[in-house]
Length: 199
Image (cartoon, rainbow, N blue to C red; front, side):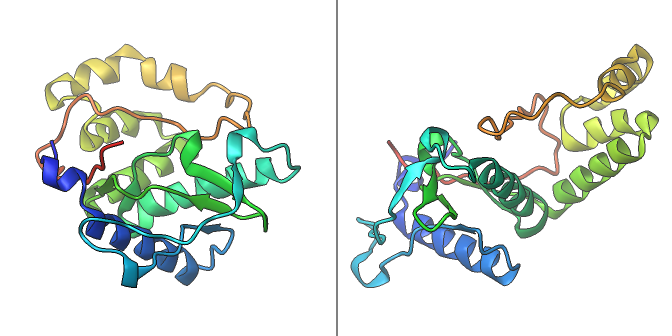
């Protein structure tokens, strides 16, 4: 659990905000951004950013909201599987449709560092789901920390993986574009660091 000092670490929040914008720009993902940090006015006690004109994504009636939901999914997958720094507060108030039709991700006070081995495990899992290699998925669950190692055989023999992943995908609801996964078992190699800011 982060210390009270880490929960109001505005220097880290400013760095996270700037690094996200730079990382998305380097990858040509110009449809997503974060507020511009005003570094000369920011310090360990205050964070100042430029004002972002926009509307909460879930309350915006524009025709391009479904596209921006896709942009959000792409941005979060890029963070999770590529940059390794994940924004951990994607509630609707932190996702804006800007007036120029881009997605702006707000509030970078809580992030998670995603270790390379976890990124690799997620890519393996996605590849196994994509190729229909259902027999490999229980081991992916262990590698990702969803299943304790001593329960591997039980999951393999239960048939739950094949029954869940061989179903047709559920319909996509564009305005409900975030999915939350909860780790029930933390593997020994998983050493994430979270920075949280008090609300």
